[in-house]
Image 1 (cartoon, rainbow, N blue to C red):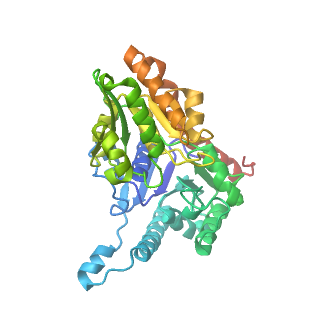
Image 2 (tube, helix red, strand yellow):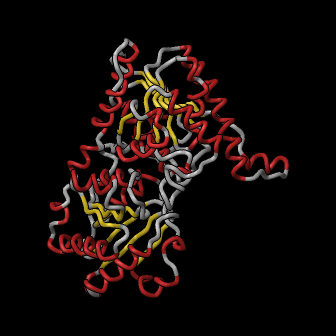
Length: 423
C-alpha cells in the first residue's frame, strides 16, 4: 500500500510561477496536495507558458521549496546570439523535446534516490507526458497521466479541431497512443472529456477517471458587488474560437429591454477588444462594454469577486467536453455564473446538478437573453446570491474532494501492484 504521506513526483512544464491557466491549475493542485500532507516534488519550466503577469499569492510560495526549474534554451536567445530566428512552431517542438529529455534525466535521478508513490505528468503543453513516457519502461514508480484537453489538438471537437475521428499528425498520434498504453492511469477534469479522449485512445478507457480542477479555500476575499450597476464579467483570454455574436446580440437585446435605467455593463479582463467587438457592435454596444489588460491571478480573482455575475463563453460544439479552469476560479470566487455553452455539456451538467448559476445555449440568442434577464431580476430584487448559492459547486471542486480523488487512484494502483484488479 502507499505511505501515509504519499510522495508524488510531478512533471509539469507549466506550473510555478503561475503565469497561465494551466500553470495556475497545476500550482493549485500541488498546493492542495502539500496542504493535505503529501510530499510533492515538481519539475517545471519557468520560461514556458507565460501568458499572464506572475502572481505573488503567498499561498503559492510554498512551491518554491519543492520546485525544480529544468532550464533549456530559448528561441529568443538563439536569435540574439546568431541573428537567426527559427520557425516558431519548429522551435517550440524542439524546445519541448529538449525539456523532456532533461526532465527525464532529472526525474530518473530523483526516482533512484528515493521512493515515490506516483509519477504524475501534466498536459498541456502537448509534450507534458513525454518525459514520463521516456521513463515508462524503467518502472520506477506508477505513472498517472493527467489530460487537461484533447491531444493532439487536431482531435479537439469542431470548431477547435477536426473532431475525434479527424486526421491528426501521425507522429503525434503515435506519441498519444504510447502514453495511453504505457501510463498506469489517466485523469481527466471532466467525465465528458474522459469519454471523448478514450473514444480515439481506447487503451486508456478502463484505467481512467475524472477528477476536476481544484478550488482552494481562502484565495479570494469576498467582494462587494456594486448595488448601482449589474456587471457581467469575463476573465481571461481563450476567446479565439468562441464566436461572440450570439452573446453580443443577446446582451444588446437585454440592454434594450431593461432600458437606460438598467445600468448594465459587460466587462472583459484579459481579452483583446478585436476578438470581441467588431464594427457591427461598436456603435451599438461600445458604451456598455469595457476591455482591460490581463492581470495577475490574485488581482483577477479580486475583480471577479466584485462582479454581479461571472461569464464563461464556449464555442458552439455538439457536446461541451471541457471544464474550463476559469469556471472553477469563478466557483472559488463565489459569484453566480452564466455559462454560455452547449446545453449537452460539462458546464450545463454541473450547474444543473450543483447550482451556482445558469447555463444558456450558446447557439441561441433568445436563450442567452432570457438567462441575462433571469439573473438581472434576481439582482434587482436582492436575491441573486441566495438563488445561486455556490456551496455545493464549491464542494465539488474542494481540495478535500480532489485530493480524495487522487488518493483513490493511488489505492487502485496499489491494489493492481499486489495482484488486485484495476477498475
